[in-house]
Image 1 (cartoon, helix red, strand yellow):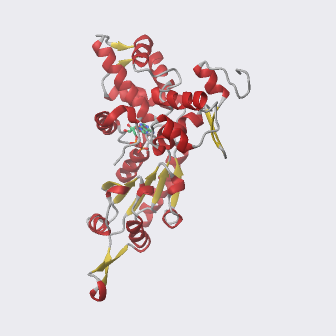
Image 2: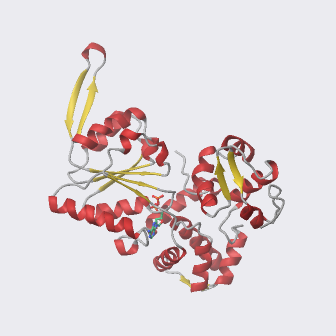
Image 3: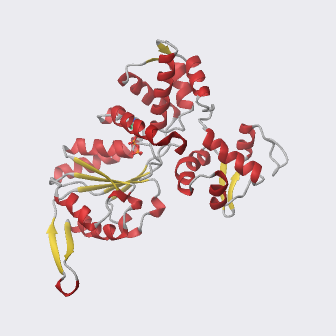
Length: 341
Ligand code: ADP
């Protein structure tokens, strides 16, 4: 299974290290979960109401880019409910039998977290409908004329779905969630707070200017902020610096070729391709993927959301366009408008 949460240039070993880092730095209580205040408030109401009714809360759906805290908030929900959480990635549930075995092993009130739920196998998804609605599974046993339908009663659980691509979720599945929440990019000040928390957990001394500098390059995404902090810490260690300063941060991030907007080599390759090979665009996703040798999904899930959010690319009906801001950032004059603004 692909992990699209970090640019692919990072490699598999890097992804594994990021996962370990994720769980080390995952906040254990609501106070540690920075930002997303409206979502937290809504969730607390849902959980409180369910607790008063002595029922499991409604099924919940979270969507937003990788690394914005969907898994973390799901763990917090389970913790708040005093429930266990079972975490599975959508494509890992290959057959109805896999689903049946997970669901029948849940206890009353447990949380079943399906990451990348837009990648669920269609047949598995259909079995999930009755599980979500009636807490029952209707499994067909045997084949041909001997086939029989077996109804299995399930414990009342809460399904939490997470997806980076809400548009790919089928509407029957989407409509079975009681509440849907979108996680957005964080504010600079929230990312600064997250870096400060993470530095404390990692027992790393860092000054405020260095925190601001990392936050500015974090793509406003907690996972990226944590990853950069870790890299800068490694760099400081090698340089035998006790405190991470702005100077050491900029040196480290420069060494990693991460620029002041948080763009990495992959982002710049995409922008330069649009500008140099396609005259600034518009260019279709297929052509862009083929020219940059990136997978379409990687462009859609990893690179594009941030480039769109900082106004470096625009999506038009004819394809992607590199904006004047992107030209300016790369120091290339914009042929489309004939000027740099
Ligand atoms: P997602 O499931 O959306 O890909 P995760 O929940 O795995 O993202 O978050 C990635 C990492 O970022 C977590 O380990 C956690 O340390 C950190 N993180 C995410 N959201 C927050 C937040 N709101 N406050 C503090 N840390 C966060």
